[in-house]
Length: 183
Image (cartoon, rainbow, N blue to C red; front, side, top):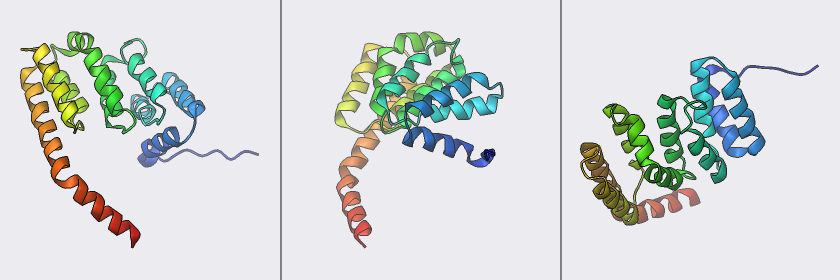
């Protein structure tokens, strides 16, 4: 007789995310199917966020593209998909590229809802931390002059601070970690 148990709700997001991250595409597909079959809104949110934990860049790209289809992913959830992919170290650059490539679509969809647009801009850019990414952001902002200016200005300030922090402390942090891990 098989053993069946429910994952406690307070750790379900961690378990799903870890499973998607560490296991293969079959687990991702299982979670995707489960996302579509469940009717519980809170469970759908946990499952959708778990899908963004994948280490497989192809699956992350697939999810980003699926997020544009409002019949598959609700409009309000699409922003969270893009932001969570941006928070994944394997997906940060994918989400940033997707955001730039699909900006016209995203801005058309969320431009009227300033909070949503602001949330999307800050969520996708908050972990950018290189001079190259800062330059891309500034150039992108210039090419859409006048659109979401306040949100983009805050994003530039955040990325400038990230670049500065990385320049000042990254080497020192790596040295400290190296010493701490040897002991």
